[in-house]
Amino acid sequence: MASLKNIVNLLLLVGLCYFSYLMILITLQYVPIDFSAAFLGVKEEEIKLTHYQIAFFTHVYTSIFVLIFGITQFSAYIRNKFAPLHRSLGKAYVLLVLLFAAPSGLVMGYYGNGGISSQISFCLLAVLWFWFTLKAYTSIRKKNFIAHRNYMILSYALTLSAISLRLFKWILSNTLELPPMDMYRIVSWAGWLFNLAIALLIISYKTNRRFKQN
Amino acid sequence: MKHIFLYTTILITLLSSCNDAIKNEENKVVNEIDSLTTKVDSILPATDTATVVNVAVNPVGTNTVMLVQDQPDLIGFWVGYFEKKVTNDSYKKNIEAGDNLSWNRDNKINISIDQITDGKVKGHSIVAGNNRPFEGTIKEDETSFAFELSEPGDDKYDGKFSFGIKKDDAKLEGTWKAYKKIDIQEREYKLKKSVFTYNPEQKLDYGQPFGDWEKVKTTKLKDKEMIEYYGEFLKEYASATELIYEVNASTTLLKKKDVENLKKGDLLIIRNTIYARHGYSFKNRPLRVFFDAQEWYIPVHTQIIDELTDIEKQNIELLLKYEKNAKEYYDRFGRG
Image (cartoon, rainbow over all chains, first blue to last red; front, side):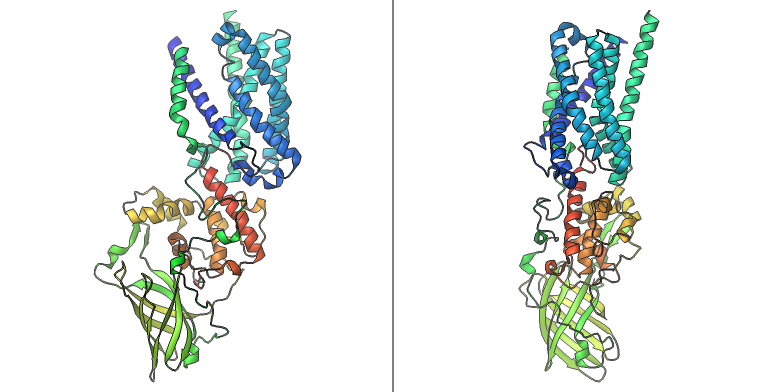
């Protein structure tokens, strides 16, 4: 069973690296700063606003590091063997989310495409992302390792919504071929609710296993 | 653990050419360069400038006489299908796409008789984005008029028209023969006297077989030409919805909310319907087949930039922006 688990973990890691790589490519579309690149082509009104410009580029340039810094954080091997690395990456992750990525995400969510439904979704996502990350940080300061682990699972699940949202969009556009905004409204919710559900399952599984062991 | 990093490094190297996953780089909108610097000049479907001759486009003026009795009544537009002459093997020239769609290569033609003086005729014909002048003679007898008209001959597709128009009638019937050896050497046609008026309210006729094209998309296309001309077309048009009958980009200034939920096919058709209303003769085959089939459509111009209204120009810019975005990002991992 141990080997099966390793294979699954390896596949997940490879998948995560691949999609992180695609996210890097997406980020590079906005380097150097270009107010008409990619997504901004359909955000013309918003990108005229200075605060939207600041929010957008802050979000794009910091979130990619949040995603990458998180990749190795759940490895017990790295946590044990390279504890200082885990702590440094963790601090950078928390700092980037709390000060930059989540607040800028909230501003972007307010101006989100797809009407009130997606706007609520994106704003809620930003608030929860901030909340989970903050709780993860405060719990480790109190040396509460279990709470830290659980909140970090929740936080990274929301970080990964960057990938799942686009993946759902890719699947929907290549199968159901829905009109673009209908699709956008669906994935704006599905993209993170799905991840949140998986995260809660993982947490409850880990919690149950812990109780059984005791 | 070492192996994991090794494998992922290898994988990432292999995938380093997969920009296509986030953005469709190939699939550019016709004549699109940059959405923000798009000038209205560069937004029309490509025209082959080598074959465009500057001919006075609308000499008709106010001649709206539909029933021909006298020579002045002949002046005007004669519109209908320019059909390939039926021969034993003519079916071979058809372009097939599975069971549901076939194009017999007939284009809508507009033969414009511009001037008749002392038995000499001047005019031009517009077909498939090609505007060609002709000159020749007219002979009149008791019951009809007979024309013999020649195109200059400096274009590959130039030829000779022979047709007749009966008196007390509004039909023009005849043949055309190419000077040079081309794929379809002879054409025949029965044209109706028509008057072109720009009508911004004009809506699309129902009945274009979008549903069938959806199926064709999955049919194996054998004909190479078919794939070339229809491959892209089918993909775009199969995705069009009922909204193409509702959204009018000639009368309404479209807002973001009007276009953001439109699919690629919708955007393409809504934009090109503006051109069709102005009588633009489409060089692009798929668009031509689509608009030729519209009852109201008359090919009149090969250049229409100057005819576009301000509303239309603004809508074209907006639609192009969303077309570009849809083509690049709609079915990709990258979000647009």
